[in-house]
Image (cartoon, rainbow, N blue to C red; front, side):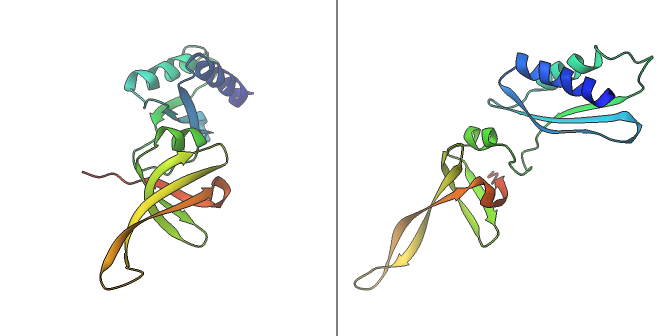
Length: 153
């Protein structure tokens, strides 16, 4: 009952702010609510406060004792939602599948798969020396074991 109430309030808040989307929602022991959100344009502290208030202000603390934590998906967190891929177009990703690891620039994100591009140095087909070649891979979301944005400083 409590979980459904919280989920309904969370859904209503996310319907009001369609730029935000849910990454994780759990209620642990002692009614500790943990919500991780992301946004098409990133997440500000104000966005977390908006979601927090939408829930906190609509649950009677006399009736339910709870703690609430609303946070944004961390920069180093794996991507788990198609919308996260779409918002990270043209950024470098490190993608792990069951059979390989690929690092490349995310050039496309559809509802079914992603496309990565990267450059490699290969021997020239004829003659000596090497030439830079652009490689490309299309990977279905269900093949991705883990994908992370590579943060460069």
